[in-house]
Amino acid sequence: MGTATGPSKGVRQKIIVFQQHGSGEKKIAGIREYAEDSIELAVISIDEPLPPVIEDGSEYLPETLDADLVLDFLKHPDLSHDLVSLCHRQQIPVISSGKKIPSKWVLTPPT
Image (cartoon, rainbow, N blue to C red):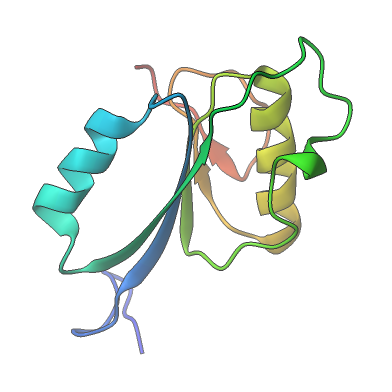
């Protein structure tokens, strides 16, 4: 079982990265280089052309997520919003660098 300072030795954190057109590749490479032994990393790339407005992101996002943390490098603001909503429903924290998404489930540090 994990402690207040982190997971027990041998327990790997599950991280899912969402990106568009390679927008998270540098960060993904860094994660793989420095943390691959301590995490399970999954990458979901959305590379098809998207409409300017997406009413329902469920066409592009999975129905459920199996993760301890989600990293949002999506460029489309509607998809980022829907991803944060999905994570909120599943109580999974999200990091969305450089975005303004009001939710207690998302951290939005500057890029």
